[in-house]
Length: 263
Image (cartoon, rainbow, N blue to C red; front, top):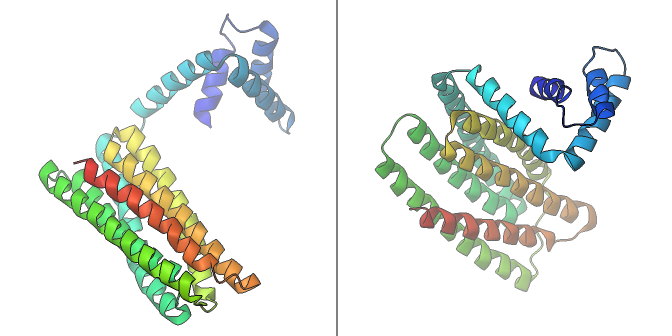
């Protein structure tokens, strides 16, 4: 937020902007209690985003670089990245146990598939921790190929199992544990993904940023599985569970092929 306030202050002195818009920016950054200054900032920001986007992006990039130069040192950012991956690792290790119990109790293909996806996410986190710890690129390349192969194995399993469930019209049981865990996982993964993207950008580390996008997709998958389980529990839509399995299948093929091709 402080970055955007500094951007507003700089744009308020920009001679190429209309004077009324500059006055609005000056008013928006004044410490006035209440919603009036916030409304002025929203109006000014909307106008600039529509009509003066290049100027806004240029000033924003400069202020972000300045903030990064005054921010934590690379060693601190590296420790932060390792900590984020450690949290991801711990959550998924515990999650495999929870998902195994829930999948067996409900006989849910989607929960079983999401448990395998969590196992693969553990491998991805280990790869990033090795990379941030200064491990050689050769070891990372081998690990990425193994992760890509594991994704493709996951996709094959889900394709066969989900198709069997749909053809056999197998009805999974309700799973309150599965719904609760996947909902919590979605929230946690979204937060971790944002932290990895921010830390990776400030550190200039594409590996951490890429794994952050994997974590983001992991959160989206958790939402898809949670929705399928909830529809089955609330409306008896048993086919929503294997369809959620197909969602993970598509993701597995995409990520697996990308990981193999990256090497």
